[in-house]
Image (cartoon, rainbow, N blue to C red; front, side, top):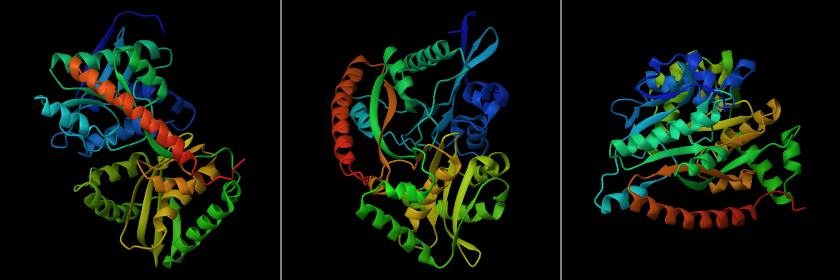
Length: 389
């Protein structure tokens, strides 16, 4: 922990009140020597959400970014929102909301430290190197105090790291463990190297799926950086709207978000499109981290067998192998990913309830849930497609 004077904690209603340089010095100091580890907590991504109207008034995600200063210098920040619903979070707390309401309380609004609409693990307590202990403690204490002082039901930190979860429990937050499916790259030289690690039956199945996907009558192309053009986003917007309407009722992101990403983050984007006669008919959007490819959205205007698997999973794995990335996170849920080499992985979150009785009740629930998750992850691992040692 760095030495210094007293800390000052502030809630900021807009990232316009923080410079990109100051924010990223806390969020991604490693970007001084290359790509950010996590594209989602950078100033560019969070500001794109805000500037595009994807978060803010009327969305149920009201920004209240936490900033921590010491002697006038920004040492820590956190993406932080006042929530009026539980949509777009992917760590589901609907059971908590229902129980709190049945007990006579008002669950919303609540506090949420998260990246909106993004079920990807990353640091949530963004501290300058050397200030991790002081910055993390200040953020956790601020969340608990704001919830208590404003008589809010709860404060949550979702998709945090395991280390942050451990720190949160030291400050009275409850640690929750859920699961996703991630693909790990131990250093494959090619997709065939990955296939060689699988059982014969699973290897044949994947080869057949990839061959079937190619039968849609066109070509599959991957775009990133300056190869991305506005017309690619026009096509993907149509796919995204269709998927969003079916999954969530209303798409979370606005059209302006994709325009901003094109202008400011296209080097951190991988857009995979299936095209026939020069026209996209399906696509998958990924964001590129320093050691991970994050699959985010998929959509199509035509249904073709196995094309979803190809664009979302196999093309992502191809890119990760080619560029030496250690992991692919393909989004929330989906036991169907297991057969394609995506293994169960622990996901961490923190939860705090100022009302002591309810806090204890949730603690009991989470103990039982953790046992069930551990059992499920062990059972699912037995169905892994890899060859047995």
